[in-house]
Image (cartoon, rainbow, N blue to C red; front, top):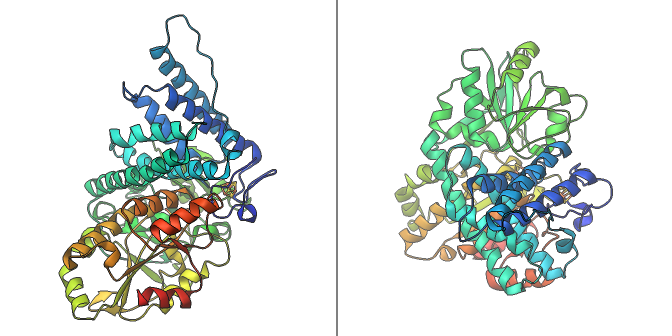
Length: 528
Ligand code: SF4
Ligand code: SF3
């Protein structure tokens, strides 16, 4: 196997051998390559002029999402997807070929990408991993009934570029930047889908206390799954706790109205094997990041949507959560309330500072900056992960000056979201804007502030420090570059799939740099 798509890749260069660091076995990695190759062939067969058929782009979104890190470890589920892509290929081919000419399956061989010239491999990887992340966002929008032709057509274009053996670096670079552009549209669509369905998030305090009695823990990004679970558990005496990227759900009016949505359980996703071991409750995974469950709790883990793991119960498209409900009632939860803490010992966190909430106090923010009460904004966002070195983000946030505001999003915030940073100019110093896709919210706030000050985003007293782990971070980073945002700091390590030449281009064009130490970086950022 060969896979180097995430930050924890073996030796910072690539997972090979019998399994990846994430636990993905070699046969599953091969099937993910086969699925990607089949999608590339489907994209080639789909006629650009005729437009992409609905069933084809549904499958493309689902197939790409299934290959995101920590999503699908199930060979049988991946084989089913490959078979479906082949059916779709045959249909696309029959629309093009003369009658009676048999269709022969010939999927693109991904080894041609993995063994290509270093820069070509790098650019194709940025495109492929970017659209994998983007597919996850498109999937969440789609379950709420939102889709965009422009986004769907681009998945096909990008897949064709990955499978184009003759593509020149310049052509690939253009497609790579277009990933950023189309992902912006995709995040905008998901923002609309979420806010139109569940309302605009409002600042909300979330306890880390688990009340006595039956409960269910729900992890991942899919708000639709949470909503269905809340509906199906209403009045049953079962409480619901978010985990990981589901935390921002507490801010949405149409979700927080369920009184049995109680709080958040657990710290960072990579602590799940320890934290799930003893809980008397089932856990539902709606997206990444699922780790191979240990025997001590594997019978209590359920998957749904694009997530799959061999031997675990998968809740199908109808989202009938009865097996979890029965298990929650049977296990009964804790006999007494149990107080948990974040990694810094805090007993509560806050969320819900999405664009509307922040922009509703825009005047206050602008005045505070003009009066010198707020000196700097930091956007510290992105993924968490297991590698040491991520304490950088905790230390950085702890050391930010008292006259600064720290905006955060995605799951990296578990490093510091239980810290009490106090207030500045009557505003909380730490504001959680939501999930990784809510980078859209952060961009809206930055654009609005730039407009209020009559300058560009790069002239604002704003520093962006990102942490990356999986492929959604790739598409979000490409979106920030597409928007012309400069001087982003990236860590904890730079991606293995960025070649020296591509890195040089990113440094020279966008001023991207690797994180160093919290002290050095803070000093540099505050000096502007
Ligand atoms: Fe390795 Fe990451 Fe690929 Fe898993 S997803 S096999 S850890 S590079
Ligand atoms: Fe986290 Fe797995 Fe990336 Fe949505 S949930 S950010 S790592």
